[in-house]
Image (cartoon, rainbow, N blue to C red):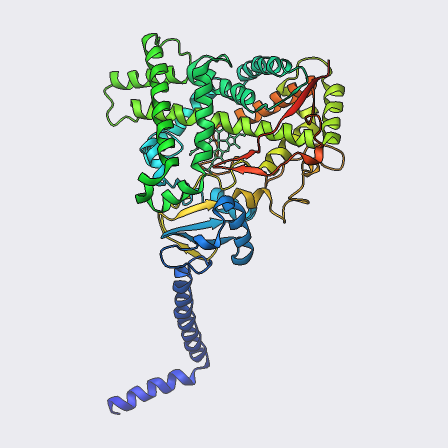
Length: 511
Ligand code: HEM
């Protein structure tokens, strides 16, 4: 028998055995599937989120309304799905839309979607220092320090409650001075909410009439509006436009002024620092810095830039947002007097004329629902603050490269048609069960979610509840004479946050 015949016998043998044939077929099928799977897999991995076709240089700028970007992007999500790409000039942005997708990205893929996109204007603000517009070690250490220190100084605890109630009285006195006549409550409300964060940061509250305090609060408000302006959005896409943009110059003036003010407060506190008795956030930071210096620990994040920008961040993030939300609450209950009736009926029945406390919240489901619904409909941070992917990611079958800008579209969560029964109307029942008990809703996400979620949420929620209930116990809010409830405009002024149009109301004493 020659070699060939040996071989043919072997093959014959193989094919004659049915078991072996089956095995061979199975191996072949697996091989084909393997190749097929990885080809498809590779294609999938390269599949980027879909989106409208971009024009050269301009990208999709002509297909979106920069004055109401969140709405435009929400509309595009209906065409392109919950994960899609848009180009702002050459800048590629992946937009996440709808509760399910935003939650999946920010919570289940927290690490990948948890970096901050430091746009040119954000870099100009803080030069990579502080909490909001930083990343890496700086962010990690500053966020951790801020959270523990805010808690030490009472965030979410009774000490904050006492301070907020004290501030409620100052605010009430301001409202009383108008004796039921029409006024715009915006500034007084901002002063009140700013004083809560000021007490934690600087260890003191300011008089509402103090011109420096007024300046500081007003500057932050203006900066937030300017940051969301169309010209600053353009600057972020085409940074070379900078010298020609008045809004950029105005913003930089505000930044300089904020640094100057913070440094002056810092100097006063340094002179009287007693590490054994910290009075505020700044004292706690300076003490930590001293301790690290004494232990000769290098590469510390505890330097003056991080202190100054963290203070500026917390003050700006903590005051205007809460003040704006409270303004929306008052605007909504003035526009919908039957809802105000029910809040006041509940407050009279449950609390009466005594001082309202945080503990009362569980017995005030309707009041709580009205505050939640105001935050939902007002949607004050509509696109959150931009994120960035920290590494290459496959998300919902799409490939997203490391360093891609991501917009978690909070508008699309708070107005998600598959989550809310009547997303575009003011309906406190969204937060009530059939028996009138308060119900939490997962899609209630005005503070965003995941590792970058708002770190002042518990303080903001306490403030909103106490300020709102306190004011509603004491005042009946009505539109100015000659204006009907229907005429009160709830279309927002669009900035980085959504603010109510300037509005007047009357605060008529109930006592
Ligand atoms: C009703 C009031 C407030 C609202 C609606 C709000 C909302 C938000 C939102 C949407 C973000 C962006 C989260 C993200 O990037 O995904 C944020 C971040 C932040 N908020 Fe708030 N916020 C409020 C009050 C406060 C208060 C009272 C403080 C301070 C005590 C605060 C401090 C911060 C800080 C420091 C960040 C940046 C977090 C980070 O980058 O790690 N906020 N907030």
